[in-house]
Amino acid sequence: MSTNRFDTKRLPIEFAPSVASVLWPRFVQEAGCIFVSLDEAFLSTDESDKPGVPWRDLDRTGIESVENKVDVLDLFKHARNVWDQRRKRYRRRHPHFRTAQTLAVVMAQTWFAKLRDEFPSDAFRVYYTGTGNVTVRFHRIYEGEPV
Image (cartoon, rainbow, N blue to C red; front, top):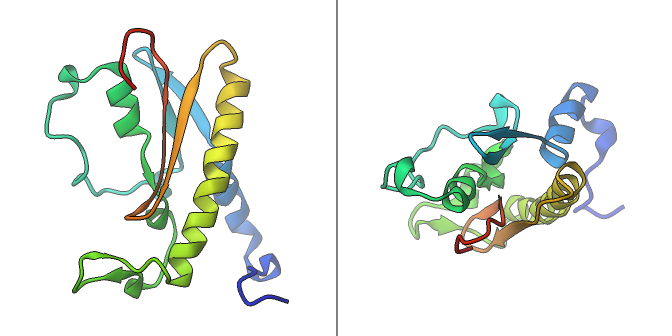
């Protein structure tokens, strides 16, 4: 068995609903926008990457893009040394970073499938970033708004 393969037999079954909610989350419509609704335990309290402009100055695409951005490493406990404090960046060769990259690709694919299934008359863009920080985000495509 490969050392990179995770043995699910060692993971307590109590974690399964939380992991499933990350891969197949609930989406909610609020104020004309669609938002991902992850378990509160998964959400980061870091507000540092929120825009410096009031929400009233953003269009729906901007609001959804910011609010639906998820830092994958923040969802799970991971080794502290994934972050290189001296260089102020992630160690991209670290096994936990690579695992987050793999998970993010699956998240982006499943989120897109679920959005398409739940909102068949709408079009979406789902983004995966796996370089500086591993993130997944999405927004609906709104006519007349830049992507």
